[in-house]
Image (cartoon, rainbow, N blue to C red; front, top):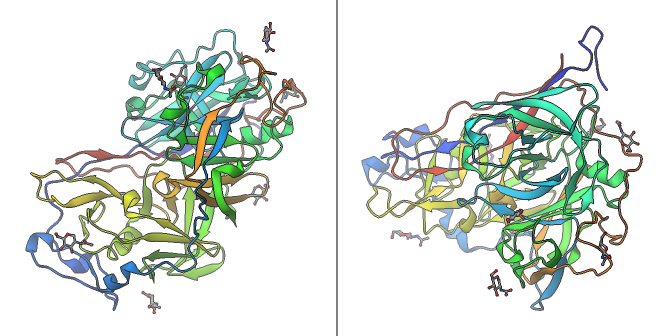
Length: 515
Ligand SMILES: *[C@@H]1O[C@H](CO)[C@@H](O)[C@H](O)[C@H]1NC(C)=O
Ligand SMILES: *[C@@H]1O[C@H](CO)[C@@H](O)[C@H](O)[C@H]1NC(C)=O
Ligand SMILES: *[C@@H]1O[C@H](CO)[C@@H](O)[C@H](O)[C@H]1NC(C)=O
Ligand SMILES: *[C@@H]1O[C@H](CO)[C@@H](O)[C@H](O)[C@H]1NC(C)=O
Ligand SMILES: *[C@@H]1O[C@H](CO)[C@@H](O)[C@H](O)[C@H]1NC(C)=O
Ligand SMILES: *[C@@H]1O[C@H](CO)[C@@H](O)[C@H](O)[C@H]1NC(C)=O
Ligand SMILES: *[C@@H]1O[C@H](CO)[C@@H](O)[C@H](O)[C@H]1NC(C)=O
């Protein structure tokens, strides 16, 4: 607990700044401005202006390299043999909204099930409370605090988004994620105010997954590990659908969607080896106070060419125009870059156009973007970085919205679902590292059947017949320490639309705590 002298005891405010869900809308035309505005002079590029309306076109003269294989790229050791993977306790199906922007999971709080956004970009778990009257609370399931205990110190929480505030009281209860249960005193936020922007998503809150524990925040992963519900203090995510054999989960269809509807998996505890191929390549986290999964990107490539950015950043001691840092955020849909980096990067995509913030790339582009992390290049194919196509009657017919977005950010990139897609990502709290492997395309999810258990039991990950009892679990403390922050972007979108495209970003920065 962290209470300074003179602070009203038992009251704290947890303020989390979150870049909100950006509604990205596209305009009739991109700025008709000169190429120089977006291009740093450099031998790698020339600007081609076939058409004055396409003045910001970029041409990569190294296009000829596009067919070259990436050196050192992680390669899939794929076998052709299918392997069935039972969806065991601790493994939860991910669902998405209809636009595939948010990935969420069912979580049991008390006796009820709530869909929560799996968010590695924020550190706090909170749900919509039944006293919430905000628009976002009208169409989603609300958490009733009847018979639920307030946190002993009567804490309140407040999360500040650029579009509004989520705030409420801190309660404690048992939280179960597909049969892995905490003790009864796990603390979480119950919001009575939720920003309107959440309205569009069929969720009841945010499942924040911090990279680290501190006085005020304890990861549910660490809590489950301390009670021996899981043997390893880590979780994994597969974003993107896996093959599956059956569309029921037999005994727990009330909790999980049919396997055939999976849009990925959230796995608490041990790694599931059959779900990836090759080795897991780890990178240490960059020390930060926001509990981010932040890591160093050694270099960024488009095809085989390293991107020399026009600004130089200091990341873990090295000042470089090649090195960047990235925050791995399952709660963000796209790849979000500081504006200048986004401009620099898009110059490597042949004929891409920009208005300075938003980008469009020809839909037939084949360049491979890759991020080198701790010596291994992780590719992001055109399938991932190309978003929605402009319609036939549009001026930009033939172009697709770029899933790489510029934003007024501090130097760190936000590596959202576009980056994580179809990889096996390991979030290792214990060793303060992040790992990646290729997803096993031959894995087939099948229902988990264990006659020794009852669907109502809460059991541990790999000791499937035991029931977890409330042992000596430390609850997450609700007091707080201060930390630094940056402010989120406040505006986005470009006015009139041809075809609206949106994405969301739920990166949270803890800024301020005890009052
Ligand atoms: C999937 O579910 C539907 C309806 O719930 C059922 O008709 C169908 O037989 C199921 N398919 C499989 C492969 O289980
Ligand atoms: C959550 O549970 C509900 C039933 O309570 C089910 O309809 C839904 O598909 C489940 N969602 C996920 C992500 O498992
Ligand atoms: C996690 O917390 C420990 C203890 O406060 C600290 O030493 C470490 O640097 C933190 N890790 C990161 C990635 O910030
Ligand atoms: C990268 O860019 C910087 C400044 O823009 C320049 O000084 C440096 O020579 C460039 N490096 C290479 C290898 O082109
Ligand atoms: C994409 O289409 C344009 C226009 O049809 C064509 O000029 C260009 O060569 C194509 N690019 C690729 C990589 O196929
Ligand atoms: C499941 O639980 C019920 C009630 O607790 C019990 O009667 C039943 O025998 C259990 N079934 C199994 C397979 O353990
Ligand atoms: C939470 O509950 C467990 C067991 O019920 C207990 O050992 C632990 O001290 C509690 N933690 C707090 C902070 O109250």
